[in-house]
Length: 313
Image (cartoon, rainbow, N blue to C red; front, side, top):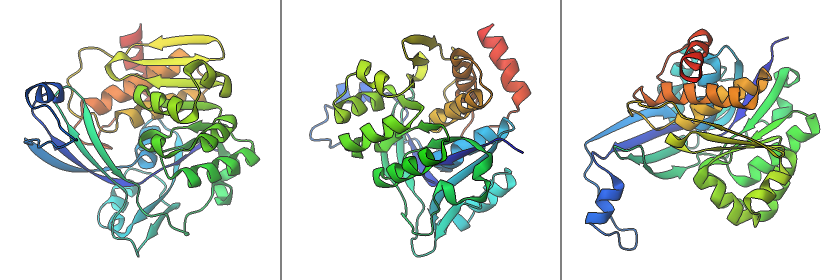
């Protein structure tokens, strides 16, 4: 039997604009009023994305049989479908709704210091979409990652997985602001791991009306990523900080969080210690960071382990 990880979330085609400067410097020079601003872009690019395929892509490179459970618009058939097949990723449970033109889409503007301005369209919510319990391979799934999607769907999936007694990693991502207090409290009670960046963690606290300490009492493990400052890992009174890999050329910040999650989830699957999970996550994020576009870096488990040993002694 193969141990698998099921990853829910959007399947997206991302549009990224490149601003050759710093948002902070721009704001200081041209004070932003009512969010009106005009950025001169030095480049534009389109790339395959979405949290479910992004994480599955990273896990696949590490030798994990990852299954994205997602939905897409009909433009998925143009090139994205072939890309995932060629990458060896199971696309049986990406439900394509031909009545909807576009997949989810993330419109991003990146500056030269790794900061982002993001607009996110979640894509079609199609009745063709299966629940985790409905896929034939569910008996082989050892971890479910609930990625960013509509709160009602995420809650439905969390309840479904809880009935199967499979550990859940809750990753609300860029839709965290859409969750009500009641939905957050229920999902936190069903999740084994919460993984968010530092901004998402602050929004989660505001919407749930819980402070950081209280969140730690609702879920066994909380991972807060902090970009170039690394990641903090909390486990019921225990704490680890993992530094990000230093002196790395920033080429592509989009997808780094998903690459981190792939490395971290691999560590969970293999029952590694929390700091080792974080180290693998930081290595995967670094590989994404130095490669243009998402789902475009290439590595292997052997290389990732060697890089971990090199950078973390």
